[in-house]
Length: 184
Image 1: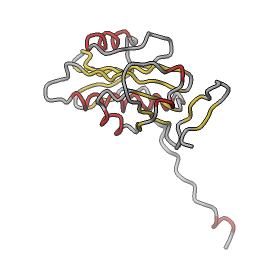
Image 2 (image 1 turned 45 degrees about the vertical axis):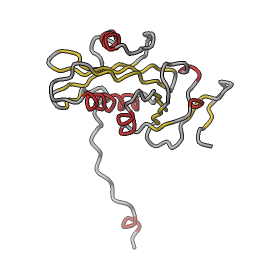
Image 3 (image 1 turned 135 degrees about the vertical axis):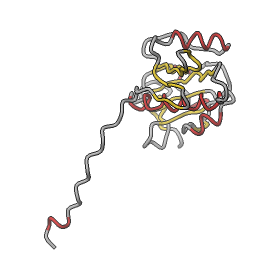
């Protein structure tokens, strides 16, 4: 058999992936990175009585809007390659829409940006939204897995999402000198 016959066929070039920041529309609601910064989402958190971290550079914020009004938002507090998701908070969703479905779509829209930033893990408190987190690929983890810089957030329970292709959740070493692997 000639050598060229043994070579694998060239695969067609894949289409370039869309931007992680492209808005999504689902059921007439637009999900996108905050256009006016996280301040609008923070006001939504305040209206709903939800805790939000202190504003810091580098945080991520996504919003859900319909008819020009904010109906949901989510914040991600960053600490190096790790993050902590606050929310989602959904209020005043359009009639006939399920607030839980809006929250799930908001989390689904946020995760591609988390991936594109190379974050290895993001954490959240379940807040009764277990179905949202599990469907998005979050798994329950012990509190000891949470990096020290993200500890002392209100709530109980802890879920973590890991970048696709990894099977362990990397956490900082207790001494801060390196990384240790979870799951051993």
